[in-house]
Amino acid sequence: MMYQLGWATLPGLRGLSCSDFRATPTDAPDNQGGVAVDIASDAARETLLRQLEAYFAALRFTNAADAFDTVKAYVLAATAKQ
Image (cartoon, rainbow, N blue to C red; front, side):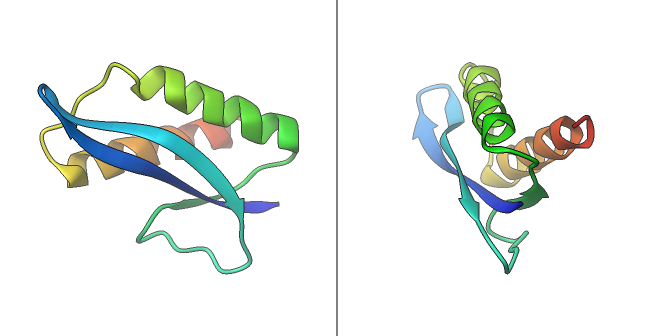
């Protein structure tokens, strides 16, 4: 099933952080506002969301474009392994 992934990018004292990852089923992927990926099962979706929260919890970014590109690259690499 195709999912649109989204997240919150919030300012902090050490830079921007990414959190609150979510996956919404979609028929019309939008790679400008998030990342669209094909995920095989609900279990795989939940696992990916947990991995994203854990991996990005400690990372900080200097700008929103860097944060978006880093999350997108991570998601695409993680889903390519499925």
